[in-house]
Length: 195
Image (tube, rainbow, N blue to C red; front, side, top):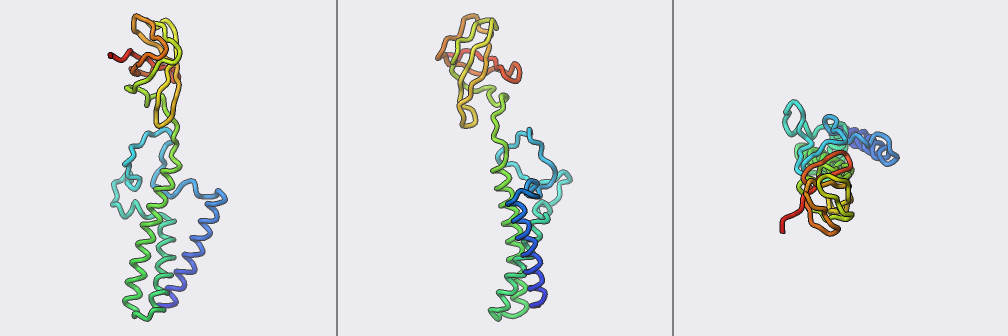
């Protein structure tokens, strides 16, 4: 058993360290071993389960990746060696090694998800503005007679967009408005907020 634990610890640990170093210098860390490609412009809700796959496999198979398996092998070996050095017996050492290997696999999986969420593009999209309240910054001519500008808080940022309105009267600076729709990729249609 000692030989098996030692081989797993050395082999898994070496690959794990090499992967970590390569990720630090920017090689191979971008994929994060997630199932499938997630397009950059895809809006994902905060509770998206990244472990789900297109063929509805079980949650366990969503956790399995090269990095999680390497971590499981490394910690299986390390925990097995530690348990054997504590003289708790072969069967108990094997159980401890399996438990620590599975735990390491899940911890690495959740760390990869956390790192992925940190890297998700936080760019504010103009479509996020629809339905939101804003203030007129540059007066907006009435009856779609021209563009003005609005300011609003969107995704924890203060943003400014060109705006038009179909209201009959001009919207003066400081008027509270609500975004009705997106006209194009840089212009919104707004309507006066009723008092």
